Amino acid sequence: MSLYDIFSKITFKNGLSIGAILLVIILSLIQVSKIQINPWDAILRWIGNRLNSDIKKKVDEVEKKLDKHILESETKDLRDTRQYILDFANSCMYGRKHTQEQFRFVIKKCDEYEKYVEENHIKNGEITSAIVYIRRLYSKCMQNNSFLQEGDSLAIGGDER
Image 1 (cartoon, rainbow, N blue to C red):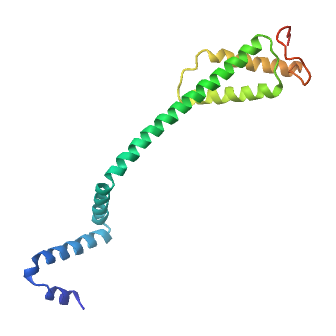
Image 2 (image 1 turned 180 degrees about the vertical axis):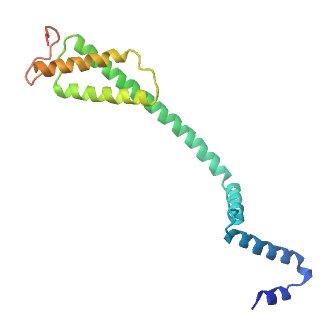
Image 3 (image 1 turned 90 degrees about the vertical axis):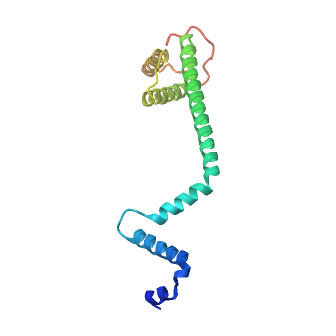
């Protein structure tokens, strides 16, 4: 059956059906042509947006809450790392000896902290001097091999690293 046969069976009584058929044909031709207008995509997107508007709002709310939790978690982790570094430096200043592994761990934390601060353009503040102190002390302990060894006393005081 040709298009002519199809159109010959449609009467003008069915004006609405003729208009609908012509619209479908025109939109389909535009959709498959090289023109960058895709009417079916636009129509389906519009329908999808109307059907999913409530879901989209809920997803946006969840996304905002998740972003807030991520920021809070990063802030807490940063604060905890900062406190750990300051506590370690403080214990060293009061003469407590540490193992080489403890120094390596805290220096790794220092590197992570400095990287995060640099990437996020955060002011570093007083922790800079603590990091410098830890690195210098680690270097001195490396030269003198004066790390806390197994069986050494953990007592504070009298440490001449």
